[in-house]
Image (cartoon, rainbow, N blue to C red; front, side, top):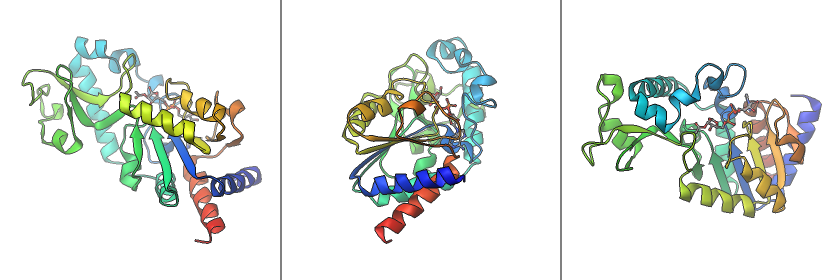
Length: 259
Ligand code: OAD
């Protein structure tokens, strides 16, 4: 870590010590060091695949097999990866606060796997299925019981018996789950400190959260090895990978707390 980054990590740890309410927003960058590709980096998914063919409902209606093949590939990829030190540091940080919300755009379940409890999923979860017709959402456990596309046929809804199942992911043009975005909004507005980590901050409405938090008075921090559209608004930008910066933030904060 550069000496500038170290100094900023200390500032962040001190700001955390003065904060009661913490809101964190994460994006694909947080899982990059686990081996999950991001979307808009040079080697990102949207530089290799076309979201119009894979991540919207029209594409699913047109060619559900293609869409399922892509999600099965991503499910397999995610089944073989582990949380990294950044995920674990966030899970530990949560235990040091009474009011800590972790809002994520990620669908990979990695924060939960690392032990984070109060996770607000804005874009769904790749391990769950949802019925395209009746809208029923099957839990991760239920989804495991359903015969998967990987075994051949397109999966059908066991509830309504007819609808095609799809992954429980928010696709382009779809609304975010209302409860999740409402809760995330409330947490952002109440936050003393808001930390945006590993997101390009270009996908709305998630990208509104740090902006709103800042205008409601939060201290705004960004952790990302590359500057983003959010960087000019942030009070501190720590230009480091999250798997490097976050363990250091938690370590420094615990020193301040005497733990
Ligand atoms: P992006 O791919 O747009 O941005 C990833 C960000 O992570 C970039 O700003 C990178 O600089 C940063 N990054 C790369 N490596 C990092 C590391 N080791 N540590 C920290 N940051 C790192 O991904 P998102 O912002 O998450 O939507 O994209 C938002 C949404 O767009 C996604 O949720 C997805 C996509 O379409 C859905 O799937 C619905």
